[in-house]
Length: 387
Image (cartoon, rainbow, N blue to C red; front, side, top):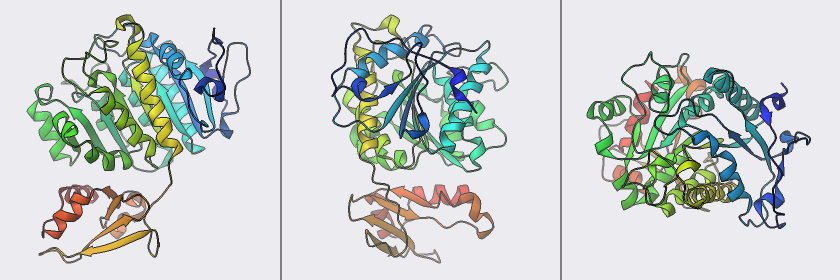
């Protein structure tokens, strides 16, 4: 499929980039230029100028090029092989835009590319998710958001406040796990938190992120898709979004999270959404958004593609017995990065469906919990999803 039909080239920059700039190292699709050979790239950047699904943030579709301008002027030592394919313009209907994004994501994923999507409103996450449908694999979705975007009505129009409902109800379902990082309890209805527990999904409050951001790393290491709503950043540092609030992530925390995401060997799509230049002051929010992308790229460059395997000398293997459980819990620790995984058994009849999910990224804390003769919550939640 020729995906170039969905893209519009970007204007050439008014200033000349240094060769050390991001913009001086990547190949881009410019107006009246040739469409890049994206199949030879490792990392792909696309913009989506769609905002019809936004809620109280009209204008967020205009911010794509503002973020791109700031990103291209950042210095980077030996950028990975990266192409910028320009922008997907809004279709005649919102569903047309979703289809365009979905079709492009399907092509990228089949070629094992990693994609950075600059939005636009966060409901575009639906299109990212549907792009994985033809892989015939289960996927994990993580959102960094101050609330859970599940609307009361599931049959109404899709928007940035209800898109998660559409993903949860989508058939056929290929979502194995959903995680929310940075939610604020006063924005989360108790019944929604109850639903998250019932579905054995992962939730990390803003206070938990603030207390120890390292606990988010295994979640991001286990994700295929990351959807980042910039409204999760406190309004003092993210004025370029009409939905931001006084409390939220700090800029350095946002950048640390996107670096963790970049380091994740599993993540193949990262979307950053809801930035709105109408409310930005001197481009500071665009710059912060660009820095978050920079950290993702920096993490991507340092991926080492390590996955525990039997008889792998790069890992230490631990077997921890737990009272009342027939088999020991098996943990793996990387000798190169000190990262941890644990093995969760699944029914033999479902081996093909769950093969990607049984080696679960975890932290040292899960190992300590098992050593105290308790089943780690992460183990239990994963096992219950296998049943």
